[in-house]
Image (cartoon, rainbow, N blue to C red; front, side, top):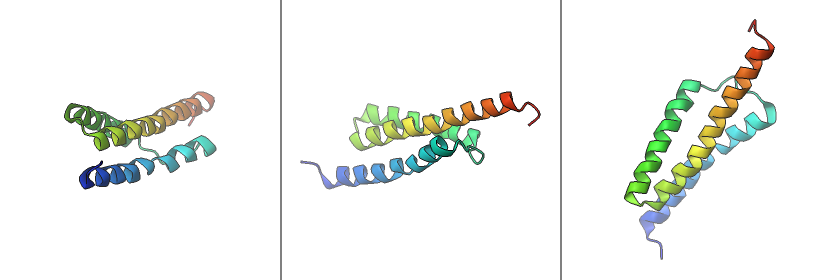
Length: 95
């Protein structure tokens, strides 16, 4: 049986991780990446990868799960933004 602290951790992880889903869906639907900060998402993605490593070392399931999913979603935002901006520069060199 799961203890209350693990349950709270899983609930918190679910909330914070799912907060990235609307951004990924928005980019996939519209292709709009104008408001995305590459520096912020780059630093954030590295931080999440480090949190994931921390969770693995501790064997902390909520930390591992939250950061694994968040790493995937944040990486998607970062990669989609880089791809879209590269295409814009390629197609419109004057911009």
